[in-house]
Amino acid sequence: MISYRIEPSNLQAHLFRVVLRIPRPEAEQGVSLPVWIPGSYLVREFARHLQQLKARQGARSVALHQLDKCTWQARCSGTAALEIEYQVYAFDTSVRAAYLDADRGFFNGTSVFLRVHGREDDPHRVELRGLPRGWEVATALPAVKTDARGQGLYEATGYDELVDHPVELGRFWRGRFQAQGVTHEFVVAGAAPSFDGERLLRDTQRICETAIAFWHGRRKPPISRYVFLLNVVDDGYGGLEHRASTALICGRRDLPRLGDEGQSDGYVTLLGLISHEYFHTWNVKRLRPSEFTRYDYTRENYTQMLWFFEGFTSYYDDLLLRRAGLIDETRYLKLLSRTITNTITLPGRQVQSVAQASFDAWVKYYRPDENTVNATISYYTKGALVALALDLRLRSEGRGTLDEVMRWLWRETGGGPMDEALFAQALEAVGGRSFRKELQAWVHGTQDLPLDELLRGLGVRWHREAPGWAQRLGVRVSEATGVVIKMVLRGGPAERAGLQPGDELLAVNGWRVRKLDDLALYLPRASAPADLSLLVARDQRVLALGLDLPAGLGAVVLSIADNTDAAAAARRKDWLKAR
Image 1 (cartoon, helix red, strand yellow):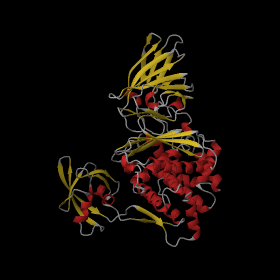
Image 2 (image 1 turned 120 degrees about the vertical axis):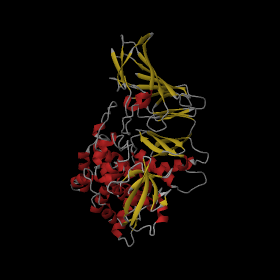
Image 3 (image 1 turned 180 degrees about the vertical axis):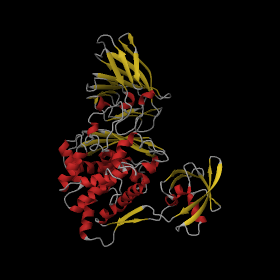
Image 4 (image 1 turned 180 degrees about the horizontal axis):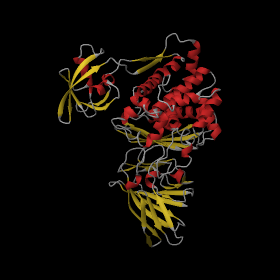
């Protein structure tokens, strides 16, 4: 059995100590550390945090020859067990890597556990020890023998399972609930004294029950235990899915507070994140791209299907909040309006298809720059709108729903890998006709989706607000130290005027500008077209530019239409049905 010992060896230096034991090693035994973590599609080079690697067989030292950036080879003698000891620097506060200080520890297996080549399917055992006084362990990794704090032995069936169970260490709040016969545990580190843990448990329970019912009705889900690991910071947001757990991060102000039954935007966003990552238990961790049947940890793993696995999950995360009764119809339509606005206002939607965005995730999505808005589209938001369009098209034709399509895929694959051809087959099986035309246009094309028409069929009204100044100008700005242009949207007034990223907007029509909203003070009619004289600073020079400012269109706003007919109202009720 492959085994590891891991302990916090130096809290102030942020170092974990790891000892890997390999029984019966090969004569030329290879080991490597993953370059990426499944669920986050960027090569992150975790091996850069490894240090002081050394190996031995019994009392004999064994040389480790480094073959590339993340791979080592040990020349072994005989069948005596090979031990490799090393340290891991852990100071990444995200959900993707590892962290250690005097207050808290956290790690993903892809950051700390070397993979033993040729032995990936052997059982893997981990011993957690050496925790500071008062620290506990939280993880979904199956325990073999542990003490009351969680120190001790854990075991996985293979390397893939081993690295799919993040571990939280420290002093934290812990609560539990049951959903469809499954024990769910919620661990929260860093919460303020005002944190209302019982409310978070109740609301999360409703999310989990709704998601399980979505996939299985009254049957048990394919998990026996699930763990939420939430790290609370001053300002942050993010999550990463795993097979029986999720690692989350949120801002301290986003948590529910004792005595406050209100529903802040931050708390709704947190509930949406919880819903999103939990839905991934089915959609991407089990029902996943055929290209991910077996992960290759040494390189990029390409797929054009992230629009389905991330995008459709993004569609259902807020929708399940509505169906769980955690938000009302008005709040749901507000969230959907934001997703639509964030997609249709980006010039990149006419440049890159959502299928290409999926394939390019490794080099574009996680590396945004000043041109991102002009050249790319998010497979999260555009994928969510593809799901919406398909769902509403199915409902309008009266043959089925996207819910039924998802469950068809689960049944046919047994919760296993799938591809776009199978998805097209599922749509046809449920919808009674081919949807290849829609898939070609909406997934592989760059045209806008017919969302206005489809929503109107459910009695949902679509209109556009008056635009804000950034929208009218066609820019994204920072206002921390004056008005600094961060992005210039393709084809907009700012680009035509010659503005570029990095410019500081000093004055408009002879008036000093400190915030974009100052423009409302200096124009006779704020909403009308206007000719502007701009003064900008660029590379220590002051330039005068002229800008023709049109009226423009603002954010999309969705609302229930007046005088909705009964059939449309019934379709909307079925779509948004609450528990």
